[in-house]
Image (tube, rainbow, N blue to C red; front, side):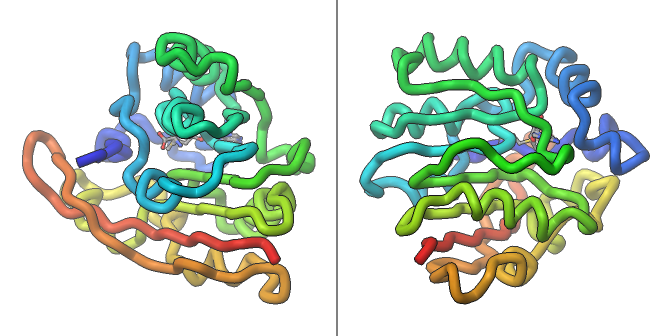
Length: 224
Ligand SMILES: C[S@@+](CC[C@H](N)C(=O)[O-])C[C@H]1O[C@@H](n2cnc3c(N)ncnc32)[C@H](O)[C@@H]1O
């Protein structure tokens, strides 16, 4: 099971002000609290949907400590790992070197909330458990989509609002950030995208040592 734990400690470390959830200060501090925030394993939905896809250039948005970037590089992708946190990106670079794929992983510090377009275009843009604020959701999904080359893939994965495993831990402090597939699909211009997957699958996870069922939102789209 490639359970990548995104439970955020029952919300205890989440700032009260939603705007603070997207700053370098918040995330650098959060990553600096421990040597490893996430599991170190690639996200299950990424592995599920990208295994077997012909590798090219990939952008991992909100890459965190780089488990997905390292996995993609191991599959032959040239990866740009983008995050607002310099601490996270330094970990990503170190993990890529340790895994022997340092030459295929580039890190880029970028603050999505500044609204600048993403530099470059890619055969795959992946955003795993990045939950943009509602008032910026369409704009940010649009920016991710604009970075996908014609024929390329956009994979957006998030926690579904009905994620029982998260509820077991007291829920997310900002439940309005969790989203359903329709929200992603609506943000993508219909004429530009073929929706390959818009689903809400479950997966078994461990929450405080107890088995639990998490529900994800998964949208995979191909740019026409
Ligand atoms: C929930 S974590 C997910 C990390 C990784 N994708 C994973 O699945 O382990 C969200 C990530 O988004 C990054 N992030 C938050 N706000 C951001 C922003 N304004 N611009 C770019 N990245 C941001 C955080 O630093 C963090 O690494």
